[in-house]
Amino acid sequence: MLLPSYLITKMKIDNKANIRFLISYIGAFFLLWTLYAFYISPPLKLQHSALYTFDIFKLLIWVAPVFIYLKYKRIDALVYLKLKAPTKNAIKWTILISFIFIIYQIIGTLVVSQQIRFNPFFELHYWIKGVLLVGITEEIAFRGFFLQEIAKHIDFKLANILTAILFLLIHFPGFFATHHFPPGVFLKICTFSFIFIFGIIEGYVLKKSESLWACIVIHSITDFMANSLGDLT
Image (cartoon, rainbow, N blue to C red; front, side):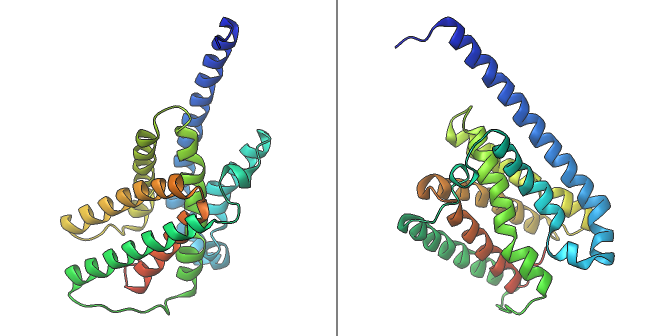
């Protein structure tokens, strides 16, 4: 059925407006996170450890605006973000991809350090920030929101690549602010490649499982292994 010309024109205008909003949102997000990494996070860590440990500012910058926007658009956030109870298919993907990443990290640790030192009893703030909250905050922002919004306007494969690039880039303010870049060219290439590929895989997990919980759990398990194996960068 052919649509009236005025409806086609309105759809094009709305689409352009949505793209402009999305670009502005991503730009503001990166700006706020960069300012936080350089000017708020360092004194917060020293003077207000509870706020730092519980990632209050990350929740405010990464998660809260997503829910506010979806509320404004009158969209059910849990449905849109795919945060309803996970299905058996989601559990299957969670187990499979988590196992692959665990094996990869163990092999990578052996290649780099020639030994395995597994210690799950790391500091509390790493448990809260780096395991429990990291998957929730980062997956809601990137796979739950950015990927799905970008995929409205371009092919999913391209949207997934673009989201993975953004996911890699958002790590750089923290790297620069804390001077925690991996040492040496080889480790830098390995780390940046892993973050990018991780983002790609998480995007496909969301598409295949139809559950953001699968992405969240995989993300948290992956960071748990990184912390337990001593990679706290």
